[in-house]
Image 1: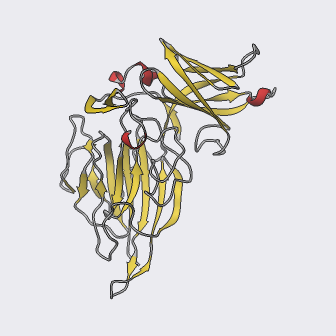
Image 2 (image 1 turned 120 degrees about the vertical axis):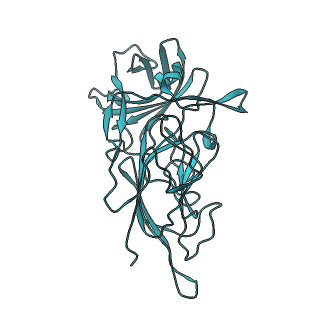
Image 3 (image 1 turned 45 degrees about the vertical axis):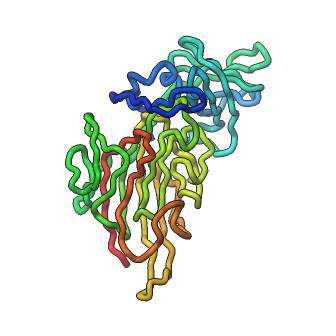
Length: 331
């Protein structure tokens, strides 16, 4: 993954539901996302952990919680998929005041201003423990072109390969769409973007899913900064969490590259082999040849029939683009 400047131009959606006394909002336009969004995101730099004299690489995830409140994860070694060991992190919290955001715990205090996070000890007046700068990472598979033999499901205009397709004015595919092609063994590329929903939490925050054969769900969710469990982004619903939570911040384009081998059945209709799946989230392997033991959640029953792929509609404005499918030979 590589760092790129922050750019985007979309629309704001106001949802009627009320969550925790706050209006449930879903921003799809960075320009209209408000002051909190300018602080949310990923930061990279070096930090002196535990007061040690030598600084080491570090990552910081800043998550907006609405009304100027924030949570932060200070990660030793770097960001997820870029140095973090998956274990060592410090959980911070704080509030925005004008053009500054302060996050802290019992050890670290982080002051963020103009895209720079300055780290100092919380209970002493020692000099700086480090600095981190805001970055926007991009998947190494972003913009991957479809192979010559692939079926292009959506590339910005044509929708003849889809059922119930809805397209935004900006030429993006909306949630709640079914592929016309049915699938057995395949390779798939999909780019998606979750909305910025600071007043919502958990499953109410940018929820969708890639339902393979309408049987097996690969979760789509704004899981930035969360633990990375089975019902969060990259999880195989109710079966397996991702090996690493590679969810990028909302309003940042992300990629799924999925390799799927369908379950095998005898002539009598009895399952002889489980389906298997490999998933790369933003270019990082999060499931490697994982054996799907059954359908997931509310998926349709397993069977020998080839079935289409569903991009779920949970009423959150998740957007999709560069969606293509490459059928693999069934052996």
